[in-house]
Amino acid sequence: MSDSLFGGETPAATETKVSSSAPLAERMRPASLDEIEGAEALIGPASFLRRAIEEDRPPSMIFWGPPGVGKTTVARLIAARTRSRFVSASAVASGVKEMREILEGAKRLRGSTGQRTILFLDEIHRFNRAQQDIFLPFVESGDVTLIGATTENPSFELNGALLSRCETIVFEPLSAEAIERILRRAIADRDRGLGRSGVELTDDALAFAARFAGGDARRALNLLEAAASDAASGQRRITAARLREISRKKILLYDKSGEEHYNLISALHKSMRDSDVDASIYWLLRMIEAGEEPLYLARRIVRFASEDVGLADPRALRVALDAKEAFDFLGNPEGVLALVEAAAYCALAPKSNALYVAESQARADIEELPQEPVPPVIRNAVTRLMKQVGYGKGYRYAHDEPEGVGGIECLPESLRGRRYYDPKGAGEEREVAERLAAIRAARRRKAEREK
Image (cartoon, one colour):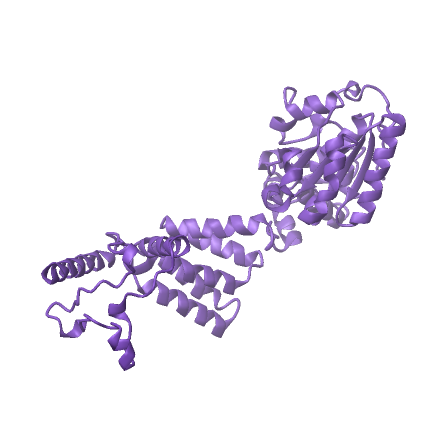
């Protein structure tokens, strides 16, 4: 984009020149919106954000997305364009006291000069929901335009009142093609990049770096810089094998306390539910390689065996529990194979959520309906008085009945006839369904004879 984007120099537009000794990722940070890769929908000519920046009227916003996708870069471009006072801070390094000082200063500045303040707060989710209340009156009054950046899902991490007053801008991970273009630009750029170094990147190395990055431009540039620094004199051609050696082991995007944790465990659970054994194995191992606690995964598989397999294959629960015991005994990494076995077994097992549905419906009745007393017929009459008042009256011992069913009503009065468990037709639940139908028929016949 031409310099006209910035409309000439403004009080906030004077930028500090990046040192040649700064990391490559910092030196290659886009200097204009047109240099930003992979965010065409966000900063394209007709986009809301592009117009807001060009017209110097950005609203309060939350930039949400993974690392290395341009959140801070866009904030810096806003700083270069705006005629407002621009303040940048990080919730990692700043506390509520510092924030209050900035906010009160913004209010005084607007009262005395009319100038607005744009506050860019990186890692805004580091402030808890109560602490985030501090921004509300200043955002509402217009004294401060807040731009918060976060890698966490704002729905979970941000105060609802604050979130409702901000536009949420979603930054997606960069595509492999976008990463490749960024790397090519860094290699060719003689002023900011590696153009003077003579470093070359083979096509396979370029593809490897793009895959390694996982949508994070900073990660790709850091790998390229490490490889360039490592290259011996006269051996400036960097191959995929060399990059693989430098990177050693892929560091997966994963935060056990963040949204990605829930995304990945959801992927494992839903892959098993859909009987996709290959995806189940992949997601399980991806979480383990990313540092997830294996016993947490064992607990999830045990839960799945009851929730999604149930009596369609009762052995699934035993397999899941045995896998947990095997991991306890063998430890990591040997015990991981037992977890793989359990996940694969559950994925391949016939599925039924009948027990899960029964549990949910019974819980709902317990929570919503009055807590009725136990029917007298199934109370235990352990004293003479209890027998006199009717405890156990009419009880029939099932083992003495011809069909093995006493036919007594065991639910409270208001729930008579309520059915929670409805077995499906998969796996062993076919036999369970037949047996249950026979039991319920016998109970009906018994009840009718007693009328």
